[in-house]
Image (tube, rainbow, N blue to C red; front, side, top):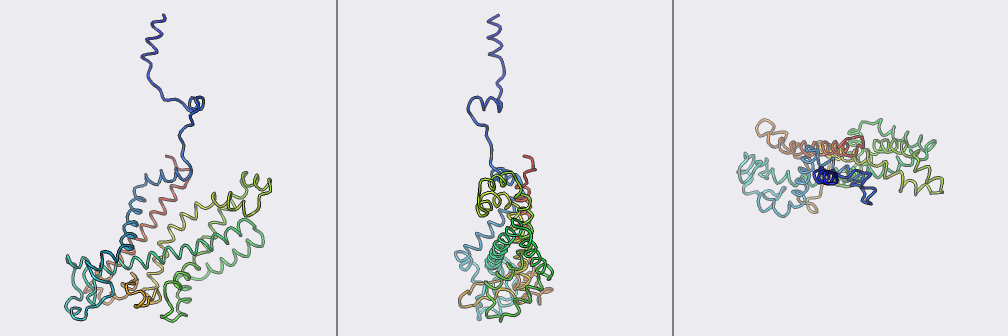
Length: 326
């Protein structure tokens, strides 16, 4: 009988310890934090990872452009008066992968340098919108009543104006010599805060009545501590999603303004390599039938970058959704 018992114990299959066994043995079961879960789900989204990879390529190419673009393809705004007539409107070749424009400048070089202006304006404008939106949205959602009503009515006034027309109105007041990077960033950023404030206000309204917030209020925590330690970390996830998608919208707005001649106007002395994708499309519209590449290449750059930010935002939204299953 004892021999049979020993044989059965030896032949018994190995089983993984349960959560109860792990707790009884003093070993905690493996777990992930909220952001760890989000990163795990984001890595499983191939479309979001492909978008992130493309954006990294665009950023690296734009940041390192001075190291490799001028030696291979020339400076984006340099016009060689001796060869401009012979090299203008050339089709794509090995020397000029995207051809040349009407002044003999390499289109590929201009597209790469154009990413600098578009990405800078997009990220900086959204940062301005997020800072204003977080502050006003937090005040509106946390204090409510008169503060909430006042801020939301101001937001309604901003939203009542057509976005692009409001931007045109603000920028057309400035002379071209003063229409640099800063005015365009501030204009797009200021016009974008109402939507972020509304989203953050809704998040705070759903979080501020939670038990842990009430517990902190009961022990005498100040409004600043409650907001910074308990409410903001648990309400900021929708803002991350919205901001990621808004970068693409800001890039599209800057391109539209540049196409209309109201975008970034950089000083050729202080910023000799500044190029805008929207301005490139504006310059190439006269050659739409004879040389459509002057519009197609910067248009594809805008399309791919904006689409990448949108798809990445969708992936971040799904990753931060706690209802998603692994």
